[in-house]
Amino acid sequence: MNDGRHKVGLVLTGGGARAAYQVGVLRAISELVPQDVRNPFPIICGTSAGAVNAAVLAANGNNFRRGVRMLMTVWKNFRAYHVYRADPIGVLANTTQWLMAVLAGGGLGRKTAVSLLDNSPLSELLRNRLDFSTIQASIDSGDLTAVSITCSGYSSGQSVTFYQGVPELQPWNRARRIGIPMAIAPDHLLASSALPFVFPAVHINREYFGDGSMRQIAPVSPALHLGADRLLIVGVGRQLGQQADRTKTDGYPSLAQIAGHCLNSIFLDSLEVDLERLQRINRTLAIMPPEAQARNAVSMRPVDFRLVSPSEELERIAMNFKQELPPAIRFLLYGALRRRGSNLLSYLLFEKSYCRALIQLGYKDTMARKDDLLAFLGY
Image (tube, rainbow, N blue to C red; front, side, top):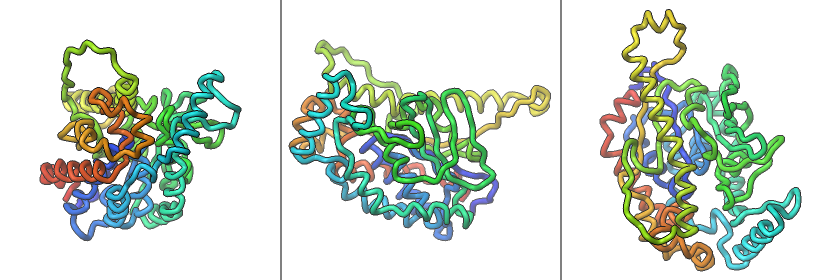
């Protein structure tokens, strides 16, 4: 059993439809940990689409397996119209409004939401299917220490982590990132998953917020501030240290290719940099004698972590299911349906066959490392 000495934080990153991979990882973990374990992750941190998965687990903080089953039910049956309006009228109306806003210099009015797609179906899904009041019940019972959702403030330029947890947790204020205690609600999830340009920003307190992966320079930081001393991070991009292929191309990049490149920069790059920084700190502390640390008042501590990330390129998997997109979205994302636009497609393809393929891959990747992960979790 877990010896109780370690408080493991679960970090679920962003990535639109790619977050289905996380569900496969969580399913495998739910099968691996002992049956009497109510929740192996007392600290749960989510960003963007990972925020939705984190909130579901937190709302089932006293029954991890039930939370995973709920995620499986939703993601295995996802259709694009569950997340955004995919009907021709809805797509045309939003696209027209978006173009008018561009021509008008960036806005149609102070309170007019401007975005390429209308994510009101996701809002309805979250409000109808998730009981946010149970988060506090899990905290009160001791099954959950904290849950956090990270958003990006458009006015302040700060990465803002809203967290709900035990009373002794303290807010934090670092360069371009702060932590604010607040009861988690649907608006936090909608804001954190509001892909720039694609989905509308959400007003919370004093400003509008967008996707939490933007300007999130330290993705693992919230879990550490909330007391985690070990981290299990579930990514949705290439594996740590894996080098991307550089191939010679003559054609000018399409708009879809550029958009996919931007999304990769938002969702993947900061996590890699943050984990490299964490590895460097761990190595430095390992060679520094304890007396030297005490003499120099070193407040840092080594943090053991595991990263589970796809063993296959998700954009290639997405191309196998491109025909499942609704016709209106296929027309809108025409460039993404060609090979060089597959990155963008992999973020927006909320269709069950693609999601099931990612769930299966996440499950397989996790089971391949089951002995190491179980030892890491303390079981």
